[in-house]
Length: 144
Image 1 (cartoon, rainbow, N blue to C red):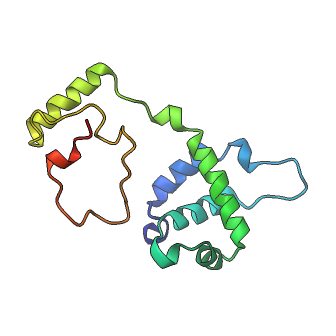
Image 2 (image 1 turned 120 degrees about the horizontal axis):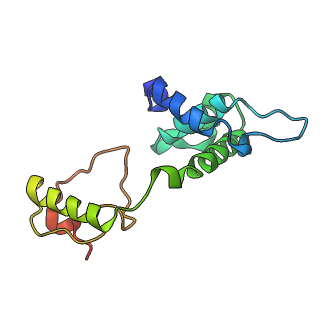
């Protein structure tokens, strides 16, 4: 399960429980949608792929569906998950930022190098499927 979807069954069930009542998964037409579990599974599988194996065609073939269905499942799941943003994501308060700065100074060897915003609050993109190929010094992380 973890190899395919990149999450444990418990995490999958938690995500499912958070999104399963979202209106995007329900319609008033006579055409039933695919089960939310399947839509989420296909979405997570696609998110866990990279390189040649991440093509829409390959994901559709693997999932036994059409490319359009895979795209739609992913759009629906992303919409439902993104609707949870404000419940789970918030910027730190001024006090919390100061606590973070102190922690960084004391524990990570970044003494006096903190610039407001460099810890991904600035939109820095990190590729998550692989670790960085080089070591980065604190001086390279300063965006200020």
